[in-house]
Length: 265
Image: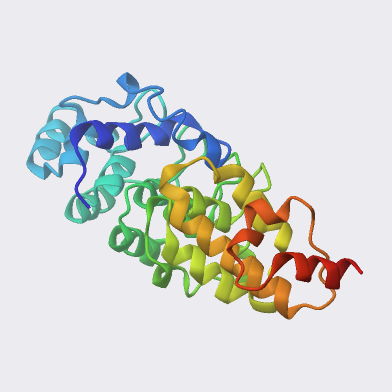
């Protein structure tokens, strides 16, 4: 996926904004851009993968710079993780970088790798500290929620326990809302398959409500409708709400009016 310089800066800023829900994620994307512009300091060098530059800076200022923070709490390791600079990450870890460090919003390098759409880097970090991979930030947003939003494919989520996969953030949004918000059709579809007969229709409604006005979510919203239709048709005890037609029912292959009469008696 091609990314221009402005978009890179925008997503980098998400490490700092502390978005509480999918609907806030892009709206606050430009906040704090200056604070994540590390220039030629160690944070910028880590993002660029300039190991020689980092070595020179360490020689000049000492090894403590490895875990230094910018004004929003991001470490060089986080910046390298966002950009997928695995060799730089390896160097930083060998020289004392701590994966467990959090920024001001409680995000770790795992959040950074997830936001940067770097599944390989995420797995690399997970080898060293597997328990941290699912650790939520202060808004209860897990790295996997960030990964779903950034567009990482469904295979990435296969080995998650249900507790992690269906976890909710502080606003009550789960992985489905994050996937739909980012237009991640792969994860949206996988969510429905994994939930199966236990699919929670209220979560479909919530995901639709949070993301119905986002252009990037159009295809995922159609998938939500398909999930709804399949669930509604196969579960004879299901009672639709009056607002369900505009959200989902108009996409169903069966006749909605007849369906309503049958279910509501």
